[in-house]
View (cartoon, rainbow, N blue to C red):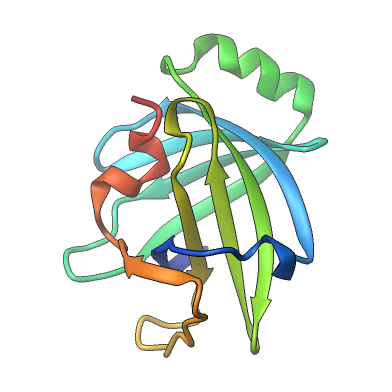
Length: 149
């Protein structure tokens, strides 16, 4: 069974020059039920269907299943999705022996920049670069599934 353990932070200063990769992402949701989300993501020339549950109280780990799907199918699924979408540019930024995924949001979420880091365990120590700001892990306003509203 697949799990995801991640922490999220706002970004407070310039980081783009540190990125080693850039992806253009559009994502939309088939379900934003509080207990589970079903997301479709188109990332450049690839597409994925992802199912996630809500983490337990006092936890940042949740189940996550992600499946590659044809881009043409993803575009068709958009027709039956919940209204709204998230459009963002993702930058892959290494720091020490960690990898941050920094999302610069566009359209309705213009100006929001959030960095995520996936961890091996909930107690793993995160080395924070200077450009990292306030932690927003677990705050619903920063869930991508809520950013479609």
